[in-house]
Amino acid sequence: MVNAARLATIAVRAEADRAQLARDRGDDASAGDACDRARRLRAQTRAGASVHPALVATIDAETARAEGRAAPQLWEAAANAHDVCGSEYAAAYARWRGAEALLAASSRRPAATDSLRAAWAIAERLGARPLVGEIEALARRARIDLGAPTPGASGAAALPDAARELDLTTRELEVLEHVALGQTNREIAADLFISPRTAGVHVSHILEKLNASTRTEAAAAAHRLGLVS
Image (cartoon, rainbow, N blue to C red; front, side):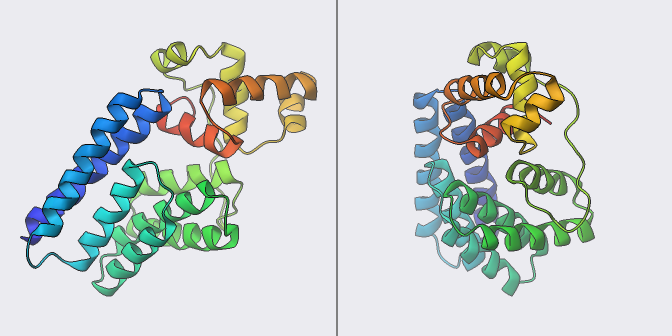
């Protein structure tokens, strides 16, 4: 049953990824379908016997992510459960997601920083490069110092299809790259040789097109869509 639960955990994570991407694209129907699949998988797993608590906790947290809910307490429970059974990678992943949830809820930034730093340290030690990259990208977007140099974003790495679907202009993509680095309008203006007011106008258009209420949300959506490094 544990092996089945592990597969279910991977499947729920995939559905949560699909739901997030669909919401970023404004495709509510696809997001709803992915969310329903995640809920069904969660129900099936919970109905089984002898499922490890760490897997149950992770599935609960991933289901909340599929639903679009910032649930840092669920990710904290998952991380703690994985700590108990010595699953370091899974614990680091949960702490990364927990930091993401804390930042999305605009609460407890110090806790998010601690969680992200702990996740980064474990992922670095394990040599888990993809996870390290995700953690460092979130740190850049949230302007969190991990205690070690993090690579800056590269030049425009937009996905043309995603950019066209969102009706983003070339200049907006350039500005978005800087937003993802956590820069202010004045800093963006200095780098791109435009006025702070013009930078602010571009940022407003970007937030509207990405259906984001904050710069952090816009940066996160852009990262998931492959619009920034």
